[in-house]
Amino acid sequence: MGGVGTWGAVARYPQLFAAAVPICGAWDVADAPKMTGVPLWVFHGAEDPNVKVQYSRDLTEAVIKAGGIVKYTEYPATGHDSWTKACDEPAMWEWLFSQRRN
Image 1: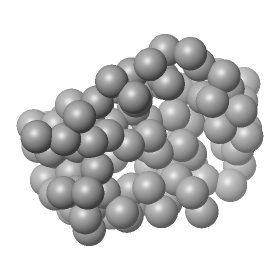
Image 2 (image 1 turned 90 degrees about the vertical axis):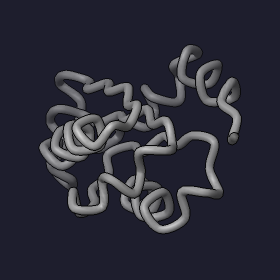
Image 3 (image 1 turned 135 degrees about the horizontal axis):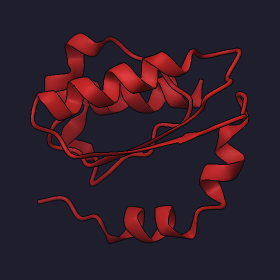
Image 4 (image 1 turned 30 degrees about the vertical axis):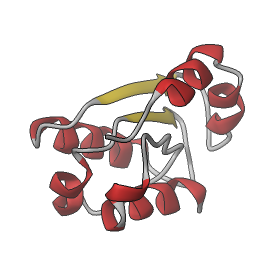
């Protein structure tokens, strides 16, 4: 439940994070305003049979609507194992480690 845990940790303890990368996760969109201070890069496989991709789509939209900064990558023809592709993205690692807390 890494993606769910990532969303949950950012919603509950946003002051602890400079950035977060939820991968194939879900969370309550009502918590989106709590996450606006943490830059996010969300990844999900379009064909995920375990966690519906719509969760990531809806959360991304809700955080952006609340004023947050979110990058979103959806892999077509990819199931639940989207973390392999996400972790193979050099740009994601560069982005993640360039973030700083205020």
